Length: 141
Image (cartoon, rainbow, N blue to C red; front, side, top):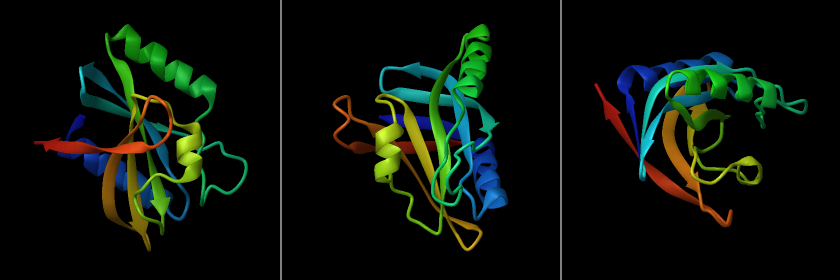
């Protein structure tokens, strides 16, 4: 399992995470997939609509996800995953992340410590939802 994205898109994710600190940012990764390889072609910054503590949780509204999906499909693309930040917390999935994740999709998590990006990882939830597997991130110029 590998997710490919440009250094520019990764920088955009980091900028979004640092800008929203100390709150969790969230966004949608749009692109293409072939087997276990996903390629991110664009990002859509989402609004964190979680009602209880943006510092610890994120939620993207179903309506916003649907709009992003319709737009992606109209261009022959698909949603390949979600990114979000963990303010002052490691870039590993939380129990909340696991409860709300879907198998197959990539979940990029950015650890932001004291307002600065510290680490970035990607994860894919197993089909039986028992745990996340780490996913390789390949950065392309």
